[in-house]
Structures are given as C-alpha cells and as structure tokens.
Image (cartoon, one colour):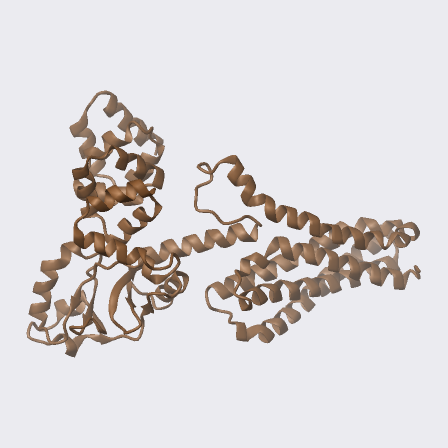
Length: 447
C-alpha cells in the first residue's frame, strides 16, 4: 500500500494526470478509498476528479464521512449531481444521514426528484430498522409476463438496479408474490410465463424489523438479497448481502466494545478525540471500581481468618482470577450462541443444566491439580482441601452466573454484552471470597 501511495504522489508532483487516471482505473474502488484515507486533504479532490463517473461514485460511497464532507464542500452543484446520480439510493441515504444540515440541503437540492423522494423514504424509518437499511432500486416483474418480456424489461431498467441476480414478482399493487433468479430466466423458454417458473417465497422482512434480524435472515437462508415489505405485504425495497455484512460487522464491534466495558461508538480509533475516548470508558470503570468495594468489605469481615492462617491470603488472587475467567468463558459462549440464534431464551434451563455439567468436570480437574500442588509445596492436607473445595464452588458458581446473566439481559430487552466480562468478574470476585472464607472458617475452626 505504501509503495502505491508513493507512486501516486510522484505522478501528482510530475503532473502526469493521464497516467495517474489510468493507474487509478486499474484499481478496485475499495482500494482507492483506502488510499484516499492516507492522502492529505488537498490531494484528495485532485485525485477524485480524475476518476470516471461510475468509479468516482462507488469510491465516494466507501470513503469516511469527513472526506465525503470535504469533497462536497469543494464540489460544484453539477459535480454533486453527477456523484449522487451514480450512487445507489441506500448509499446516498447513508451519506445524507451523516452530513450536517447545510450539506444535506445542498445535496438534496442537486438530486433529481425521484432520487430525493427515495432518499427521504429511507430516512423516515428508525435508524436500526430494515427500512433504513434497504435499497429501493430493485427489479420487479409481473406474473403474466413471458420470459422474453421479462428480459426486455431487465435490459431497460438494469442500470438503475443495485442487483440483477434476483428479480421480484409482484402484482400491480406491488404485493410480493415470489422471486426468480436471472439464471432461471436465461435457462427457460422465452414463451414461458413468469408465474409458472417463479419461486414462491415466505422469506422476507418487514420495514420495522431490526436490521440485526435482517442480517441473520440473510445469513441463515444464504441469500444474495432479501425483500422488505410493509404491513400490507407490498414490496418497498431489498437488502443485499453486502449491507447485511456491514450490519454484522457493526454489531460484532459493538458487542466487543461492550464486553470490554466501553460505550459503543461509530468513529474510528484515531479520529476520536482523547476526551471522547475517556468518556466512553470512564463510566463503566467507575461502576466497576465502586462495585469492587463490596469485595473489599467482604474481605475485611474475615480479618480473624487472616490473623490465624495468613497463608489463606496468598490464594485469593488465584481464586478470583479463575472464577472471573470461567465466568467470562461461559458468558462469551452464551452471547455468541444467542447472536447466531443457536440459543433461545426458552433454552434457559437446558443451558443451565449443560453449564452445570461442564463446570463439574472442569472444577474437578482444577481442584485436583491444585490440591496436588499445595500438598507438594506446603505439605498441608487441610489447606489443600480448603482451596480445592473453594475452587470447585467458585468454578460452578461463575459458570452459572456467566450463562444466566446474558440470558437475563436478553429477557429484559438489554444487550447481553452488557452482562459480559467486567460485570461478571465483579460479581464472581465477591462470590468467590464468600465461598473461600466460608469453607476456611469451618475447616480451620476460625470463629
């Protein structure tokens, strides 16, 4: 990548614009957008204007919001119209949604009425809905069309459609009847009717369905595109697999951030200010720090145990760490299972029973290994028994908490990732201390 950037910059310095245009045209639009992200602001408009219209529009849709805003500010009205006329409507709507009001006004002013209407149609839906994600540029066919008529229609409208691999069959009132692939059309007799060769479909999403559910449906049914219908089963748009992949990536990033106790955000790491970074992290850190005071209070109640058996203190980090790790493992597996619909809320007791069995096996191994270590190192069988029993209790408790909390969050309509590693670790720390010293006070007769 660095070698390519240096070559481009050298051609810019030498003003070899025709060679530079040819060089850029040989590249994929995603790679061009990535190169633009590494270039200085004053060079981006020069390079962008060298691109052909269709390449420029596709590259523009893949650039980050700051660079898009920079270009729009330097665009003439005709350039704005050229770019947005080439964009697919869902990409145009995404760009409009991120721009300041004055820029949006200028964009909409320079788009044709049809495009403006479709952009506004998408923008009226909730941000996380299928309606906000869909593209209204699809190919629709009528059931009584012949294959020959259908192919003629596809040729006529193909330049405006985002995908041609799947065409949708609708009534005159746009009610969805089925779908047909371009492969089926090409392999069928030209006189056959669409209604006789189409596939009836019961796989669709509604405009207000959550976009994460849309992405799951695309993945589950291995679709290239999925239809979006309104409450009256009228086809209003489609969601393509590339948009579904973007949603999956966003949701995965959000879950990772929440599992690390970081408030979700959309900006990239380097573009976010230091204050914004701190603000996203500090709230959960404060909550976890203050909640750790509970563990400290519990430990303070067992001062007598420390005084009698000082060696007990040295095992606290190991117990708390083991418990936190077990709880995090369990929570991660459950969150992942729920995200891919492998685990349902109705599976609560089934999951609980499975985790109980797994934790019994794991705790037995961990307890046995630890007992052997303590006997070899300290020659104290009572201490080995106390610590090993504490490990068994801690592992079982942490595994159960790790599987229950994410499912409880889901039941309460919260993001399961909220109940992940940091919060589980804090709860397990307190629980492991209670288990440990409850067992120790019994075996060492500490009052």
